[in-house]
Image (cartoon, rainbow, N blue to C red; front, side, top):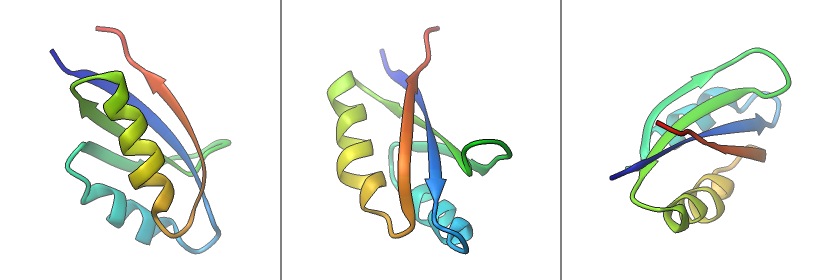
Length: 77
């Protein structure tokens, strides 16, 4: 059984397109879109366990140039 999580991103000005492009290349990422509101983008990830969420966000998404902040939300099916 996989776990779906949604990661909201705050992105540096002028880097939204490159961040969306980079995050979309990660194998865990199913969808990534720019959004309106307090955050700049939303990313849907699907992984096997909670530790994999931490791995994807902390060691992959946070290392993408332009990502300033994230907020992660696990979805219940």
